[in-house]
Image (cartoon, rainbow over all chains, first blue to last red):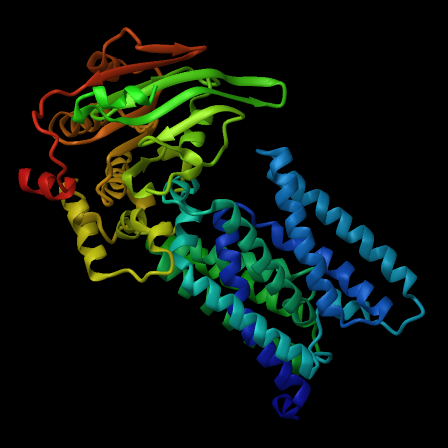
Length: 266
Length: 255
């Protein structure tokens, strides 16, 4: 039986292919700014939003997105308070997100909510609306990143120099967080909240060991993300596996491959 | 202070002014009423031990921190209203960047042109040729497509200097540029800075530990001290006129 002929699978594949471009791209900027764990935090907070959405009967991805954006402002605010302990603010917001999600999910026990599909991802539940939202988010994120890629590069490479260049550093930091929140809330239904950060960080980890230039790194992370997601979703569809887990294990295999290539080069 | 400005020779404009600048992290006061003026073509060494507030002061001068008290002026304009950031070149501490960062020498040098002035603008052919000039002047053109993390410390210093020079700046800020390289490389690099100071229309602010090479050039007696910070200054009189020239262009001609 050919899985590709099912409409639900075509939708999942299309959504995955879109997310596989933007998630690794944002991940690259986050990793280079040493904020790799921010993805994990925002995804856990957006799960709380999804739960609330089910509870009050509002489109869950929209509520998840709103939560993630509020959380990204919260992280920036806490980062200022704790200065050099930036990861502390990330840990606090993440704990808050999980706590809130668990409360909301127990309150919503009576609803027919498939929690698993949001935690581990599902290729069966992507609706037409979901796909449209994912497409819009992808277009918006790509447009912003491509237009501002020079400035984002400078910011990631050298914050002081970016400030001397006259760039509004605080605005750019917030912009990166908000774009990440957008990507994550679009991705959780496919990859799952628990694993979405892998799609942000592992392609970047491959890019760091393989790429010589920034331009190469951008191309590489998108290619690696795309290959892992498309192949992963196909395998998950054929063998009825959890899509998020399949994609992430493929990513880890690619990372091992990248490290081996690097070793051969040296 | 600013009314007397006209009494100075044209080559003696105020470039950077710190007027009773203070900063504290919580109850811990790092800077207390720092006052200092750097004039055109001064070479200023900002010398202080760890924790003396050098980094805090530098972050304020580049606009990343706001002074809690006092005022900072750049080229006579209070920093809050200062817009001409292209007049300032910045050379970072080498240890601040990750050697795994995927960027070539050319990409890093070009990034000196990215700023508010060119927001959303594409990289032009002229930009590329300016980057080539800057790399040529510092003799790193052969390294253009190498990954910056693969270079030696001395080569990396030159890359960052090329990035700072690409905008034809009037003020060069150097944050511990000598850290983490051997004595010979330090001496060579300082020789280069000295040459630029003596023959070109540039003002320098170099943040440093107590450094023998720097002090022997600037003089051991600080012009101003503030807490654990000391400002050592040497003015350059070698150029008679104050002609404004394209720095990269003249450096290139000198070969």
